[in-house]
Length: 112
Image 1 (spheres, rainbow, N blue to C red):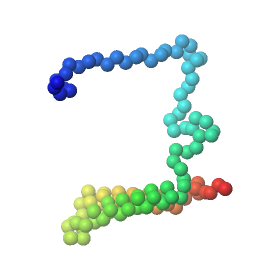
Image 2: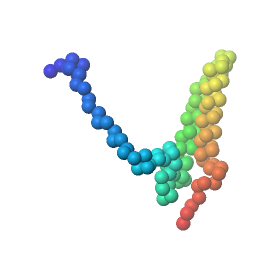
Image 3: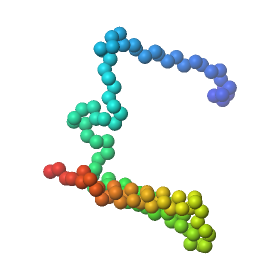
Image 4: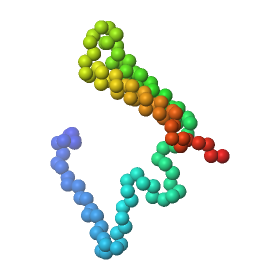
């Protein structure tokens, strides 16, 4: 018995990757984020409920970050650079939520 640290360390054997015999046989790797086939859809769905949930969550999170930074300013403390940065980040997060809700590029449409 004993702890895991008191046991002797056993080496882990990792198999070597197979090497290509011919350079023509090796296929090029797809670019990251690019769909591998035309039938493959986007990573995230653009459904209305998903956008409402994520947009409202981001607006709420941004409002909370802004509110926490604004509390000492309301008590009369002078805002420092950290407080102002926190307010800007809170407003930015809330604006991101508005963008998700409004869908400005018109990508979210109903296909019947």
